Length: 610
Image (cartoon, rainbow, N blue to C red; front, side):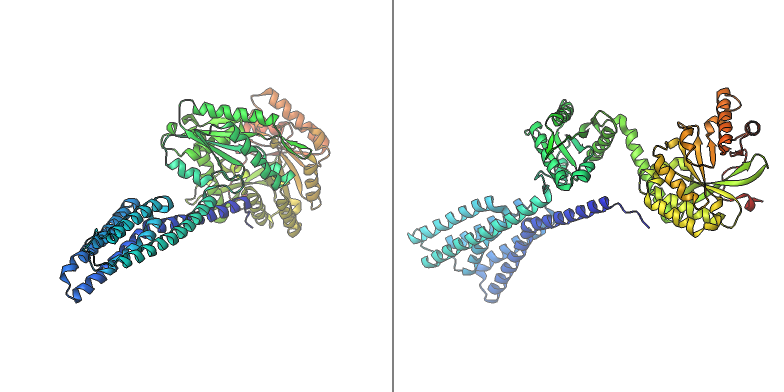
């Protein structure tokens, strides 16, 4: 079974929806601007070509020159539009040519009525290319000029026109009506574009510009400071009070932030979840100014608490700052995020990213790489046990094995636990490692008489699915439960002894054994172990490896062995790396020895090696 991170899935779905809306929005805007130029030029080409063919068939050579000019012009505009991406300039050429050609025909007294068709296209083209404001100016000027021509013809100032006065007047009225309709239609499209832009570029809850808007704004400038602000322990507010109260807390925080930022130089954004961002121009003192803002905000939130009913909820934020002018070619968003993570770990509350923190960034890259290796190893069945022998110091025989996890990458390189286990514990991959190790170890030893031990950590006790898996495995392999030994790492700090005790009671019902691993490295409270019914204490290697040199270490081990014998608990010495250490371990009556002197971890057990 795969462990899914539903928060990540939800964020990905949300992001994909926003990206789809953004794509639709850009397509809509692109069509209404740049693509419309192509459409206009194609229409103009078709009309001009039709007129050219008509005149050619009727042998009207005297008027064919205008149609050829129009034909060449629209062909030129279409070709230019394929390479030149400025809709304002290209559309201006189209409008100027169309308008000049129409007025030329009117003022010269031409009889080509079909050229007036361009008049009725003019308002539509202008509004959809230049928008409401500029389109209104273009069309107002065009109507004034057109009406001036009508007045000139009406008063016989233009006497050579073949167009009737009524024809010009009717066409002017039609043009006004088309202008009004085009304006209303363009206004509707502008409303649609405005609403689409609001959904894409603004957060629905806070109505602040969102992440997409911030990224577009950042791309327009190379000298900005970015501050990412995160609410500490916001998940607890949602869990305790509910998401609706969490939303109100975010609105409350938005209002407090707007009170502190300088709206003339700083812009506040709402990012995903419980994160806000401030973007400002990079200046010598801007970073310090934002730091003071965060300190002031946290102080203010201590006084002006978020009140919900009878509860006073104290909000606190952490912040990461990145100055684009100080990070060379690095991404300002990722560096600000790294600074934020460092701030949340520290008590400072706000940290500015600097080149000295590149090591931190490298660690993040290392962690991501390691997680990919672990994930691929699990998916491709490249996670397996190595077995290290444990010697009975009385019989001098190998009677037990400890199962140690290993993984390999795609090229066969083997990784030991210290290279990946801590990273795995911070992810959702660790429970899978425990389950795979248990399954493979049981399968390997179920037909042998060897006792074998499997390591469990504190995380395993608090994972109900892992406990359920262990229970099912023991039920299915009840015949070998007496040979299974679960090792608990004492150095991690067994603080919840109730949970630990319940687990021991559970597996003891099946006849399994319990070891306390790394004993002596933690606080080693014997009072607790008296009630836990453990079978083995594995004495930590930091004590064993120095038995021949450290008198205090030897005294400590002797006392552990003595007390363990009185409690009926067997002892195992780890890190037995030489004959000298092995002889001392036997001399002080440790029951079992484990270490490189006894045997190295291997994918095989000794019956296979013999």
